[in-house]
Length: 258
Image (cartoon, rainbow, N blue to C red):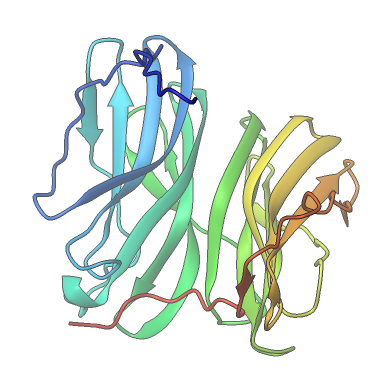
Protein backbone atom coordinates (compact mmCIF):
# COMPACT_ATOMS: atom_id res chain seq x y z
CA UNK A 1 0.00 0.00 0.00
CA UNK A 2 1.39 3.36 -1.00
CA UNK A 3 1.15 6.27 1.35
CA UNK A 4 1.80 9.89 0.49
CA UNK A 5 4.48 11.63 2.48
CA UNK A 6 4.93 15.38 2.48
CA UNK A 7 8.23 17.05 3.25
CA UNK A 8 8.83 20.60 4.32
CA UNK A 9 10.57 22.42 1.52
CA UNK A 10 13.52 24.61 2.38
CA UNK A 11 15.64 26.80 0.14
CA UNK A 12 19.04 28.45 0.33
CA UNK A 13 17.57 31.39 -1.58
CA UNK A 14 15.74 34.40 -0.20
CA UNK A 15 13.52 36.78 -2.11
CA UNK A 16 15.14 40.20 -2.34
CA UNK A 17 13.16 43.37 -2.81
CA UNK A 18 13.72 44.88 -6.27
CA UNK A 19 12.16 47.84 -8.06
CA UNK A 20 9.61 47.47 -10.85
CA UNK A 21 9.63 50.95 -12.39
CA UNK A 22 6.99 50.31 -15.06
CA UNK A 23 3.44 49.65 -13.83
CA UNK A 24 2.62 47.63 -16.97
CA UNK A 25 5.47 45.12 -16.89
CA UNK A 26 9.12 44.49 -15.96
CA UNK A 27 11.41 41.57 -16.84
CA UNK A 28 15.00 40.80 -15.84
CA UNK A 29 16.81 38.43 -18.20
CA UNK A 30 20.36 38.32 -16.82
CA UNK A 31 22.56 39.09 -13.82
CA UNK A 32 26.31 39.47 -13.22
CA UNK A 33 28.16 40.00 -9.94
CA UNK A 34 31.70 40.95 -8.90
CA UNK A 35 31.13 40.71 -5.17
CA UNK A 36 28.45 40.71 -2.49
CA UNK A 37 28.25 44.49 -2.85
CA UNK A 38 28.58 44.84 -6.61
CA UNK A 39 26.14 43.34 -9.10
CA UNK A 40 24.09 44.27 -12.17
CA UNK A 41 20.86 42.93 -13.65
CA UNK A 42 19.45 43.68 -17.10
CA UNK A 43 16.19 43.18 -18.98
CA UNK A 44 13.35 45.36 -20.21
CA UNK A 45 10.20 47.24 -19.32
CA UNK A 46 7.19 46.75 -21.57
CA UNK A 47 3.53 47.70 -22.02
CA UNK A 48 2.48 45.57 -25.01
CA UNK A 49 4.68 42.50 -25.44
CA UNK A 50 7.78 43.82 -27.20
CA UNK A 51 6.10 46.97 -28.44
CA UNK A 52 6.85 49.89 -26.10
CA UNK A 53 9.72 47.96 -24.50
CA UNK A 54 12.56 49.95 -22.95
CA UNK A 55 15.87 48.75 -21.57
CA UNK A 56 16.00 48.05 -17.85
CA UNK A 57 19.21 47.95 -15.79
CA UNK A 58 19.53 47.62 -12.03
CA UNK A 59 22.52 47.87 -9.68
CA UNK A 60 23.08 46.12 -6.35
CA UNK A 61 25.28 47.99 -3.84
CA UNK A 62 25.14 45.43 -1.06
CA UNK A 63 22.06 46.97 0.50
CA UNK A 64 19.44 47.38 -2.21
CA UNK A 65 18.70 47.13 -5.91
CA UNK A 66 18.37 50.47 -7.66
CA UNK A 67 17.18 51.22 -11.19
CA UNK A 68 19.81 52.96 -13.34
CA UNK A 69 18.73 54.89 -16.41
CA UNK A 70 19.81 53.28 -19.69
CA UNK A 71 19.44 54.35 -23.34
CA UNK A 72 16.99 52.94 -25.88
CA UNK A 73 18.54 52.79 -29.36
CA UNK A 74 15.25 51.71 -30.91
CA UNK A 75 13.46 54.85 -29.79
CA UNK A 76 14.39 57.23 -32.59
CA UNK A 77 12.93 60.65 -33.46
CA UNK A 78 9.65 60.33 -35.32
CA UNK A 79 8.77 57.00 -33.70
CA UNK A 80 6.16 56.80 -30.99
CA UNK A 81 6.75 54.34 -28.18
CA UNK A 82 4.14 51.87 -29.39
CA UNK A 83 6.17 51.16 -32.52
CA UNK A 84 9.63 50.74 -31.01
CA UNK A 85 11.36 48.18 -28.83
CA UNK A 86 14.49 47.75 -26.73
CA UNK A 87 15.41 44.52 -24.89
CA UNK A 88 18.57 43.48 -22.99
CA UNK A 89 19.26 39.75 -22.91
CA UNK A 90 22.63 39.50 -21.17
CA UNK A 91 25.02 41.44 -18.94
CA UNK A 92 28.71 41.09 -17.98
CA UNK A 93 30.77 43.07 -15.47
CA UNK A 94 34.53 43.51 -15.57
CA UNK A 95 34.78 46.35 -13.04
CA UNK A 96 32.51 48.92 -11.43
CA UNK A 97 33.25 51.26 -14.32
CA UNK A 98 33.24 48.60 -17.03
CA UNK A 99 29.90 46.83 -17.51
CA UNK A 100 28.33 45.57 -20.75
CA UNK A 101 24.78 44.63 -21.70
CA UNK A 102 23.59 43.26 -25.05
CA UNK A 103 20.25 42.53 -26.68
CA UNK A 104 18.20 43.86 -29.58
CA UNK A 105 16.09 46.81 -30.68
CA UNK A 106 13.70 47.79 -33.47
CA UNK A 107 12.21 51.06 -34.70
CA UNK A 108 8.98 52.17 -36.30
CA UNK A 109 10.69 52.34 -39.68
CA UNK A 110 11.68 48.65 -39.68
CA UNK A 111 10.10 45.54 -38.23
CA UNK A 112 13.49 43.82 -38.16
CA UNK A 113 15.37 43.35 -34.91
CA UNK A 114 18.96 44.58 -34.78
CA UNK A 115 21.69 43.86 -32.20
CA UNK A 116 22.47 46.47 -29.55
CA UNK A 117 25.36 46.82 -27.08
CA UNK A 118 25.39 49.16 -24.07
CA UNK A 119 28.41 50.06 -21.92
CA UNK A 120 28.45 51.50 -18.38
CA UNK A 121 31.54 53.61 -17.64
CA UNK A 122 30.91 54.06 -13.94
CA UNK A 123 28.69 57.09 -14.47
CA UNK A 124 26.24 56.33 -17.25
CA UNK A 125 25.22 53.80 -19.89
CA UNK A 126 26.13 54.54 -23.50
CA UNK A 127 25.23 52.93 -26.82
CA UNK A 128 28.21 51.29 -28.55
CA UNK A 129 27.95 50.55 -32.30
CA UNK A 130 27.86 46.92 -33.38
CA UNK A 131 29.08 45.61 -36.77
CA UNK A 132 26.97 46.04 -39.86
CA UNK A 133 25.59 42.66 -40.92
CA UNK A 134 25.47 41.54 -44.52
CA UNK A 135 21.71 41.14 -44.18
CA UNK A 136 19.07 43.49 -42.78
CA UNK A 137 17.05 40.61 -41.38
CA UNK A 138 16.19 40.00 -37.74
CA UNK A 139 19.28 39.85 -35.53
CA UNK A 140 19.91 39.77 -31.79
CA UNK A 141 22.67 39.25 -29.22
CA UNK A 142 21.63 36.79 -26.51
CA UNK A 143 24.75 36.13 -24.47
CA UNK A 144 27.98 37.86 -23.44
CA UNK A 145 31.27 36.74 -21.88
CA UNK A 146 33.97 39.14 -20.63
CA UNK A 147 37.56 38.24 -19.79
CA UNK A 148 38.99 41.76 -19.79
CA UNK A 149 38.15 45.27 -20.96
CA UNK A 150 39.65 44.42 -24.36
CA UNK A 151 38.53 40.80 -24.64
CA UNK A 152 34.75 40.28 -24.73
CA UNK A 153 32.57 37.90 -26.72
CA UNK A 154 28.87 38.11 -27.59
CA UNK A 155 26.68 35.51 -29.30
CA UNK A 156 23.24 35.42 -30.86
CA UNK A 157 21.72 34.97 -34.31
CA UNK A 158 20.64 36.76 -37.46
CA UNK A 159 18.50 36.05 -40.49
CA UNK A 160 20.41 35.92 -43.75
CA UNK A 161 17.94 37.10 -46.38
CA UNK A 162 20.59 36.85 -49.08
CA UNK A 163 21.18 33.13 -48.67
CA UNK A 164 17.70 32.23 -47.50
CA UNK A 165 15.15 33.03 -44.83
CA UNK A 166 16.82 31.17 -41.99
CA UNK A 167 18.78 31.95 -38.85
CA UNK A 168 22.55 31.79 -38.71
CA UNK A 169 24.81 31.78 -35.66
CA UNK A 170 26.18 35.21 -34.77
CA UNK A 171 29.43 35.74 -32.83
CA UNK A 172 31.17 39.04 -32.15
CA UNK A 173 34.32 40.18 -30.32
CA UNK A 174 35.22 43.43 -28.54
CA UNK A 175 38.94 44.26 -28.71
CA UNK A 176 38.84 47.37 -26.56
CA UNK A 177 38.11 49.64 -29.50
CA UNK A 178 35.28 48.14 -31.55
CA UNK A 179 32.94 45.17 -31.88
CA UNK A 180 33.90 42.95 -34.81
CA UNK A 181 32.20 39.98 -36.44
CA UNK A 182 33.86 36.60 -35.94
CA UNK A 183 32.98 33.93 -38.51
CA UNK A 184 31.06 31.05 -36.96
CA UNK A 185 29.63 27.84 -38.44
CA UNK A 186 26.04 26.61 -38.48
CA UNK A 187 24.73 23.24 -37.42
CA UNK A 188 22.36 23.06 -40.40
CA UNK A 189 21.08 25.17 -43.29
CA UNK A 190 17.67 26.10 -41.89
CA UNK A 191 17.95 27.59 -38.39
CA UNK A 192 20.73 28.25 -35.85
CA UNK A 193 20.51 30.33 -32.68
CA UNK A 194 23.13 30.77 -29.93
CA UNK A 195 21.63 31.59 -26.53
CA UNK A 196 24.52 31.46 -24.08
CA UNK A 197 28.31 31.66 -23.90
CA UNK A 198 30.96 30.79 -21.29
CA UNK A 199 34.63 29.94 -21.20
CA UNK A 200 37.87 29.75 -19.26
CA UNK A 201 40.06 31.87 -21.56
CA UNK A 202 40.23 33.41 -25.00
CA UNK A 203 41.30 30.03 -26.35
CA UNK A 204 38.58 27.98 -24.68
CA UNK A 205 35.07 29.37 -25.20
CA UNK A 206 31.77 27.52 -25.48
CA UNK A 207 28.50 28.74 -26.99
CA UNK A 208 25.22 26.82 -26.88
CA UNK A 209 21.83 27.13 -28.50
CA UNK A 210 19.59 25.21 -30.85
CA UNK A 211 19.15 24.28 -34.48
CA UNK A 212 15.80 23.74 -36.14
CA UNK A 213 14.43 22.41 -39.41
CA UNK A 214 10.87 22.25 -40.75
CA UNK A 215 8.85 19.44 -39.14
CA UNK A 216 11.89 18.00 -37.39
CA UNK A 217 12.77 17.90 -33.68
CA UNK A 218 14.64 20.88 -32.27
CA UNK A 219 18.24 19.83 -31.68
CA UNK A 220 20.99 21.18 -29.46
CA UNK A 221 23.74 23.31 -30.96
CA UNK A 222 27.18 23.46 -29.32
CA UNK A 223 30.11 25.45 -30.66
CA UNK A 224 33.69 25.89 -29.41
CA UNK A 225 36.25 28.64 -30.01
CA UNK A 226 39.92 27.70 -29.71
CA UNK A 227 41.31 31.21 -30.05
CA UNK A 228 41.43 30.98 -33.84
CA UNK A 229 38.10 29.69 -35.10
CA UNK A 230 34.65 28.52 -34.01
CA UNK A 231 33.64 24.93 -34.73
CA UNK A 232 30.48 22.90 -34.20
CA UNK A 233 30.90 20.17 -31.58
CA UNK A 234 28.51 17.19 -31.84
CA UNK A 235 26.24 16.96 -28.81
CA UNK A 236 24.87 13.79 -27.27
CA UNK A 237 21.47 12.62 -28.59
CA UNK A 238 18.42 12.74 -26.27
CA UNK A 239 17.93 9.76 -23.90
CA UNK A 240 16.42 6.72 -25.59
CA UNK A 241 12.72 6.27 -25.11
CA UNK A 242 12.04 9.98 -25.04
CA UNK A 243 10.41 11.41 -28.09
CA UNK A 244 11.53 14.99 -28.72
CA UNK A 245 8.96 17.60 -29.56
CA UNK A 246 8.73 18.84 -33.13
CA UNK A 247 8.65 22.46 -34.15
CA UNK A 248 8.58 24.42 -37.32
CA UNK A 249 11.39 26.88 -38.00
CA UNK A 250 10.81 29.83 -35.63
CA UNK A 251 10.62 33.39 -36.82
CA UNK A 252 11.89 35.93 -34.31
CA UNK A 253 9.70 38.96 -34.65
CA UNK A 254 7.99 41.52 -32.53
CA UNK A 255 4.28 41.56 -31.83
CA UNK A 256 1.80 43.37 -34.00
CA UNK A 257 1.74 47.11 -33.64
CA UNK A 258 -1.06 48.63 -31.70
